[in-house]
Image (cartoon, rainbow, N blue to C red; front, side):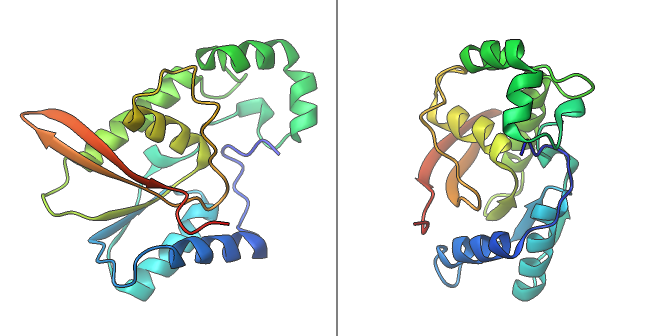
Length: 186
């Protein structure tokens, strides 16, 4: 299913996957804050974890998944039929994604990168857990890795994927480094 802003809760399997990912984090990890998408498939887990760890939670709309508009909620096979021409173009060039009634890819990318910049400007020593979506991570990780816009297909981002990056702002310029991806997952 094409899940953008469709606000389904986590399934039982989804909860298991999120808990498995959380176990992949070193015990005693001292987050200073959890930041989450407002969509309940992220927010519910973030709320539970923030309460259990007694740390602040910030729910931030900029970390929402892309808005697929009229396509949101369509089974993938149906979406490929309904949007066949754009789907073919999109597979070659991500910038061609422009769902009717939704959010085009380039403004989505810009929204996510602005949110990433805002995280980088948190006080020194911040250690933030971000609970967000696969489409968002398809912007963040390739940016950190320096991958070209249309060469990100080899990057696999499964459900409940745990990745870590480090952000640093020096003299107003954001630099980042990739620490790990999909840790603790089978």
